[in-house]
Image 1 (cartoon, rainbow, N blue to C red):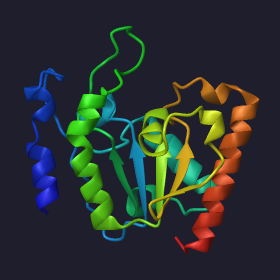
Image 2 (tube, one colour; image 1 turned 180 degrees about the horizontal axis):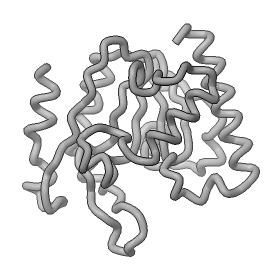
Image 3 (cartoon, rainbow, N blue to C red; image 1 turned 135 degrees about the horizontal axis):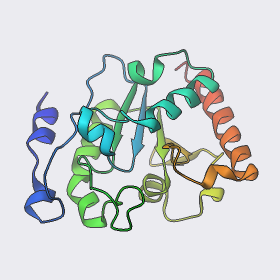
Image 4 (tube, rainbow, N blue to C red; image 1 turned 90 degrees about the vertical axis):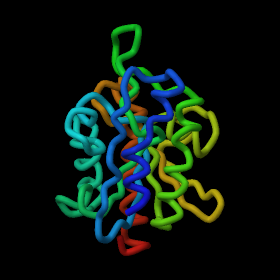
Length: 195
């Protein structure tokens, strides 16, 4: 597939000086993608292993889908996993977590994401974490988006909190209730679209 080759060959952020090295993550080619899931950027584990959501976030997301009634294995078999940027941005200068990609980095990768969405034409897009939510729905607090479904330009978006296990947002009981509402909506959409 030409898109895969173009992603793997991309060095735009490295050439622009945003990254110390380029290691674009290969888009997964799955036979029957029914959902697209968009995260912020590859993490360190994904960078080492070479596939999206290879670390703790993938484990959490898989479990969340199972809570929403999807069968075990669905996460890797039927969900096209992608992100706003294709390379691990590196560790945060604060020493805590990963560096969020800049707006310029996201702009350099955006055409890949738009092509994926055009090719797949998903019935549902899961936005994972505040950066992905803000990129598609505009800046707003997580508490104003998690638990709701949004329609934009004929696409349905379901926001989910960051799933790495590092996020403290889910420590609050009210926020865990919002996650439960989001998973209930995901279950409803699973039945509605026969996902």
